[in-house]
Image (cartoon, rainbow, N blue to C red; front, side):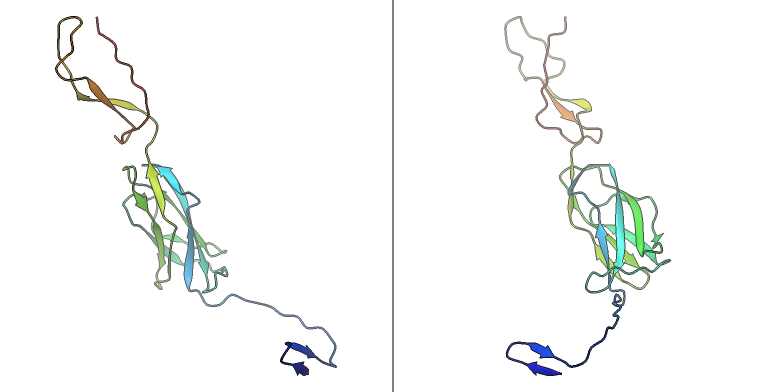
Length: 173
């Protein structure tokens, strides 16, 4: 080889071909994905953990037990789960039932190799209930105001307030 180091150019009188096979390094972490940034409180999503080396090259290695945990409650359908022949473990996760909370999911195997998902948020579901807030069981003379203005809270099935929902009050005759 002759090289010109000032220009990083090398030449050789050698000719031929060679094959090169690149392989992933040793297992170093799990790449944990949820594919959501927000989810209705109390709903489920599938979480995936892909075994990888330090440089995020995926590793196909089956039968590694993966234990799951979440930063803000919720529950897992099965834990541990096991990596398949592609080095992927999956689990179904049910978020906690409180809106406006954030969470991450972590996968850890028996050799303490771990990875954590990006943060995702829980949001209110659709309006499901009216909950009495104030002003019940009052009476007043016609064309006068009751002492306490009647009010209700609109909530989802987990009792989280649902904002921006119209409520129409009517006299009961």
